[in-house]
Amino acid sequence: MILRAHAKINLTLEVLGKRPDGYHEIRSVMRSLDLHDTIVIEAGGSLEVQCDITELGGEANLAYRAARLLQQETGSQPGARISIRKAVPVAAGLGGGSSDAAATLLGLDRLWRINLGDRRLGELAAQLGSDVPFFLLGSTAIAAGRGERIQRIEDQPNCHVVLVNPGFAVSTAAVYGGVTPELYSDGEYSNQFAALAPGTSPSAWPLVNVLQDVTCRIHPVIDQMLTALREWGAVQSRMCGSGPTCFGLFSDSDRADAAVQAASARGWRAWLTRFA
Image (cartoon, rainbow, N blue to C red; front, side, top):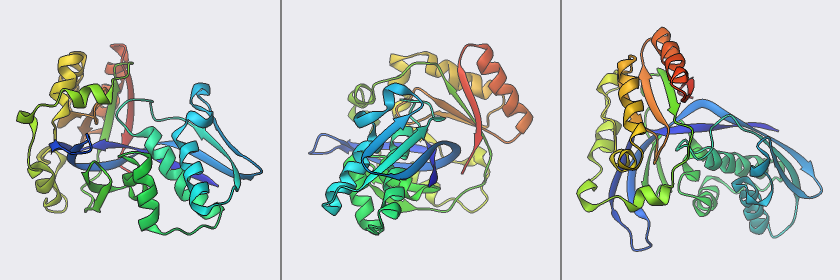
């Protein structure tokens, strides 16, 4: 069984307040990207997870935790060999690990003939991480709560997406720890996005990421990347999740290609992709 585990970007990311459980209440429009990891799942006598990034293999991988959770759900110990080929950068705000876990849940549900159904799979996904439920659905959706409540919305036009990464990771906990009440909103940008007329140009999308200013204060290079993307022709640019990756939306493929080359020339990592 060969599955694609797609990356995502947050077209909106709003924090509504602090929850009693210590998490933040969010409202976010997420869109899956064509950029993806490849998950190969085979029947096996025991449970194994391998990754082409060696340190991401084994029991520490979120995909392994997803498989163990399904074993606990069935009360049995079926085996599987899970191989992950990474293309989505790690700890980059693109949800690669969460997407791998979601693909593993879906794949093993079929391989082991569990047939849990969407609702129960969504509940298990929420136990693994805030972004995992989105990847069970993909495409375009609004995530609410701490990210586990997913509502599908209509896709807007596809475009060229340039991702730029400075080559280091950031702490999601540290970024959320820097969110102060004056950054809270009521979800208006996400609601506006959901209400867009079909076919609205990306230049008119109400994009926002309230974590962007927090991460930029810690890592000023983020602001440099956002500015550079606009200078290279992006109609809009924002940070992905808690960072450090940034995305630029391009209507012209030649400009998008040139932006990837220009970013690489500055020593940044860069990818060209589209919406999935």
